[in-house]
Length: 134
Image (tube, rainbow, N blue to C red; front, side, top):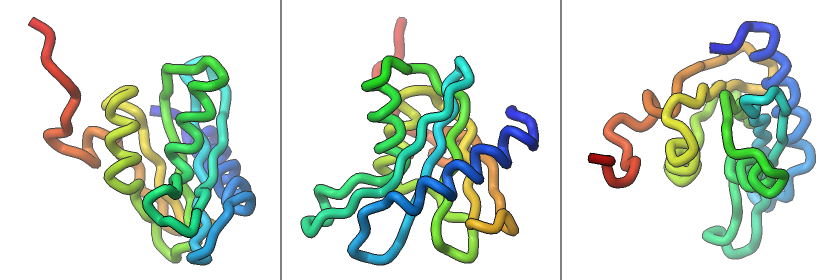
């Protein structure tokens, strides 16, 4: 578990990343991904006219981090325009599970009046994690 100060820093960073989003729906999402080495990688949602080709903030941050050489993550903060904390979508949950089922997911609204913290494995009980090693 990360401390409260770092948690708040991730939320603020994710909140700022929302404003870089490309949206048609008007729903801005920002993410701040914490690597195990302490780097913070941001992401925002990028919407296209073909909704299925759009990408969420969480996956943007993960793909960006991997392209920068990072593969080990400790936490991710997700901030939306909603009045309450929102969880990552199923695609994003599966992406996170694939990297590490113990990644801490910090979900918050922009003013931090509603913050929910869970591991990704708590968000996705009985998640598909691939073939078990013998």
